[in-house]
Length: 366
Image 1 (cartoon, rainbow, N blue to C red):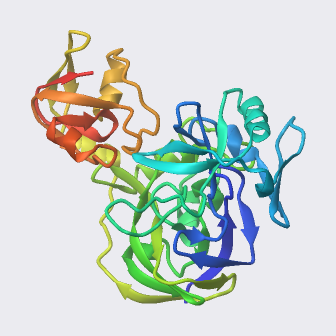
Image 2: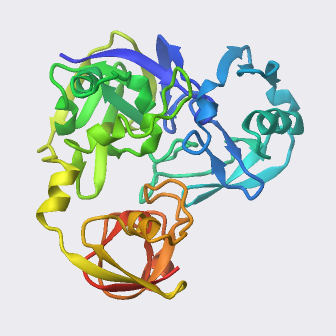
C-alpha cells in the first residue's frame, strides 16, 4: 500500500519548502501553507516563475512569528502583531483577492532582494477565494488546496534524465511512495490519516519545474522538455495530482494511503509525435502589426508570434494569468484552456495566445 513519506508547506508563495512530520489539513489546504504572497505595485502576484531566487528564501517558525533569511540579506522577522489594517486588491491568475497588507519594512526587504518594488500580503480570515467553478476555499496556492507527487513517478522521470531531479522541483504538499510510477493517475478518492481527499485533476506543469530548489537557478529546458515526451495530453504536460480535502484532520508521515475510488487513467503521449503527425501550414495575420506569416496547426500561437517577432505580453505561459489574451478576428483555433478569461471576454472572441493552436488561417488583433 502507498505510504505518505513527506509533508511540505510554503508559508509564502514560492519560497523554500518547510518539511513537517505532521500537518493539519484545513479546507484551504495544509495549515500555514501559502498564506502569504508577494505582489507588484499593480497588485499582480509574483512567483518563482519570474523570480526563481524566491525559492532560496528560508522561512522558520518562531511562536507566531516568521523568521526569514536569504542570500546576502539580513534576517527578517515577520510579526503579525505589526500588520497594517489596510487591504490590498491582489491579483492571482484571474482571481482578485482582498488581502491584508503586512508592513512597509517587509516590502522593503523583499524589494531589495528581488530588485523590484513589491509588497507582502496576507490571506486574512476575511479574505475569500475559491477553486474555479467550485465553492472549495483556497488561499494563495495556484489552483487547488494541495498537490500530491508520487516518488515512484519521480524515479521513472529520473531514469530519462542526465541530471536527476527531486520531488521538490514540483513543489508538492505531500509526497507518497507509490507501488508503481503514475499509479496516482487512476485515483479519484483517497484517504490519508484522518482525511479523505478528492483527487481532482492532474497538475499541468510549466517552466517553473526547471528551477532547481537547491540553487534557485532555472535550467534552460529540463525536466520539462523530457516530461513533454511522455506526459503530454491535449495541450498540457502533466505531473502530480491536485487534491481537494473533504474534511479537516491530521496527516502524518508514515500514514498509509488508502485508495477509495479509481477511474480510467489518461493515455499520455509525446508532444513532439502529436505535433508532427498532423502538421499543416496556415497563414497567421497579426492585425496590430499588419504582418502575415506562414505558421502551422501544431505550435501554440504565442510561440509562433515570438518566432515572427511579434511581441505579445505573457507571464505564466500556462493559460492562468490572462496577460497574453488577443482577439480572434477570423479563423478557427483549438482552445486548450480559457481559464484566465471571463465569460464576456470569451463571447467577444478573446483567446489566450499561450493556450491556443491555429486550426486554419487566422487573423488576430494583439
